[in-house]
Length: 240
Image (cartoon, rainbow, N blue to C red; front, side, top):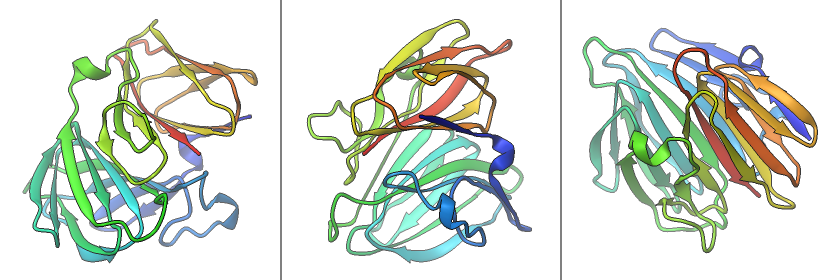
């Protein structure tokens, strides 16, 4: 089954210092019928105003993945990690037994846009950790190279304490990649920019920026770039 959730169906949270689009229940958005997809608990698309951000706050027993789309994101945590993350950066924070962190926009004039996903860990009580890296265009162009992975025997990617594999491909117009979805697994696909055509047993669907597909099928998922101008960039997550 493929369920397409359009960009307009997301919940918009507008504050003076941050604009967010929530794909699942979060903060002031409470919808019991849309609380998670497998172990994916949250997917937030955030825009932070200059010199604004989330002050230091705690988390525990969560696996948090962030991807910087534009601007620069400043990360600080109680483990002593301090880093400015430019566009193209992916960070993984394993909250484990407990971690405090802040996320701010250090720029005086440029907003920062970043996506954040929360996953349930494979078990409680992990040692807190944090890591990041910048993804290059070359390693993502027209192929599925894992950016984050916690699956046993999985390919290289930033480590996470959750049985997932997360990809952030760039797909040129007319190019197609196929994702072999395994039995009893889920697939979550979110289109960041450009246009995609996806096809599976349920038929063919057209996606625009901000649209997501929640897929529960044992099939070969065909993903084709259909942008009339530029490439398509998207997030694909293999989820138990």
